[in-house]
Image (cartoon, rainbow, N blue to C red; front, top):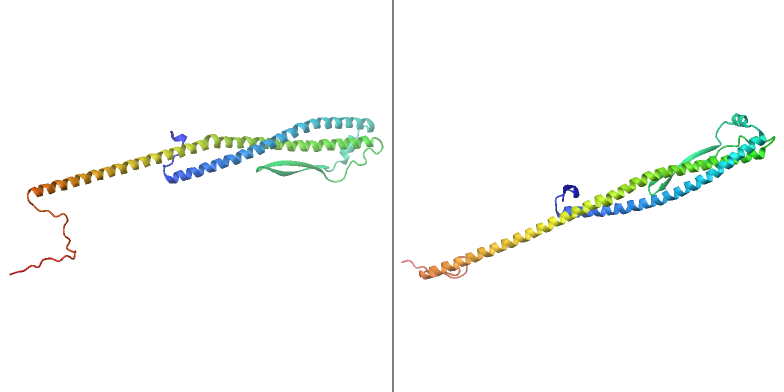
Length: 253
């Protein structure tokens, strides 16, 4: 097993405990990131469907707006100079907010009308109904454009976040977790080998002690036999001076 296939650690019980905790953390992180990726993908598909529907609807609204413009020009004549003279501030404004999806902040744009209608009296002489219809159609077109911009911005943001999340999920699943598992296998193998070596060493020590004891007992027995052959009396056990046994009196002349 090469050094790149496992984490460089000293095989011990503490390292085994640490690696087990890291493996559990990696598995938990993989599970959470997988759920996050699934949630983002679901929202991504919903936004994609909304974008397609909004673009189809946008075509119809822009067609109606263009037709209303032609109809208003035909009825009221060229009123562009009147519109330019009355422009002082925007009637439709855009505000933004954040939408939290699985920890990802998505920008959301909303359009709203601010102030009174500056072209309220436009077309009073003739073509008022056509101009009113023209304004409403272009209001709808602008609102739909803002909604489409919000959806496309969220779409691009989600696309980048999903790619990053999937890369992290794949890295944990195919690199980090297998590496920790190989490290655990290496530590377990080394510890088992160390236990076998320790058991073998203790067994050899016991055998060595038994052999030395047998040789010592054989030597003592052989020595006793030699002393007995020479007529030397041997004591089985040496006397202890601290015993309470009475000694014979010694008489000095």
